[in-house]
Image 1 (cartoon, helix red, strand yellow):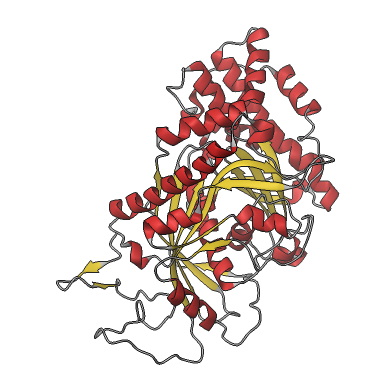
Image 2: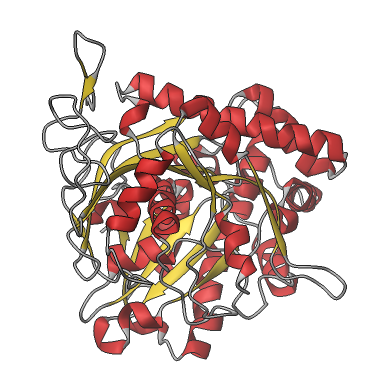
Length: 482
């Protein structure tokens, strides 16, 4: 897919029909004949292209989603189209040091400072590699929304601790490498208004899955598993969502695969190892019955600081001591992830007056959703709910989080508050939802952002989104689903 046409005079033209923020078919303040157009219409529609980026807790890849957003006015539905999605590799020169540091939890201020810059370089280079691979001109991208790399998430501090989020990948470095205005640090921005900083995907979950009459859950299984319940419009809809981090997703599974293969295998592809083993149910039950986080009432969020490699190794040791082979160990660890999700539904949804048996559909996303062992267990335990792939919405399940950070970058630049689940610690609208590192077109981007809804002191939260065209350029997640 091509987004830029190079002309003989060295200038560039956008693809047919593409308008940047100004919505007037202009680019970089120029009109077609190359003469600056100084006329400013009283109000302009929104039309922009944003690259969302995400590197998950497991550091198994850098998700890149190039998204076009259009909105005629602040009251109209937001239209989105995923133009291109890809996963760029995490270089080993940065992956191994980061995972080692997180496992050993010993470092220095000097190393942390350097790591922030190195991760910024990693993300910036990933942008340029993505653009080169897919023939996208960086100057055609209005914004980057980068989640960064979560190093530590202290969302539920103990007495004497301060709630904080540490996501590295310096935005100014990304902006300097790419020339594109970059928005980062979404988690800290949420914590600044009294929330926990995770999960951050209710915005996209709700907009993709709202329905007039059906109760739906979006279940993500990344390094950490998280859920979002979207009630039907008749039961409050987007204004009544609840979400939280369930607990371990792929993190324990990936750690076990690295352990048993001396690092040659990063994950259990298609759940092949877990399918060959026998679950040691007593180990599963003991872990879920006694783990503090798994039994903590929402709101709650977690990460590698709670479910990291050291915790995973303890489960491996328990399995080996009980006589499990490597396949039994993978089966047991995979069951912990699957059984805990069902536990979260049955133990905590009733406290929000949500009847689990009324859930019509569960939409799966994240790498763990491709594990048949997990899907089979969910279908067995929740027979009244249809287990579906988020791909059915037109957005690939693997791309969802990167798409979410693209939209969060948009909302930050517009100063527009996003949806807030009702079980959050604070319901304060957040119009300062990230840190912005200006790029080469910063003044143009902000001029056109301010022209959208010009004259207003605030913009209404988006509650309706239209996926203009389903994205078919990625591997569809479908095996084992309804």
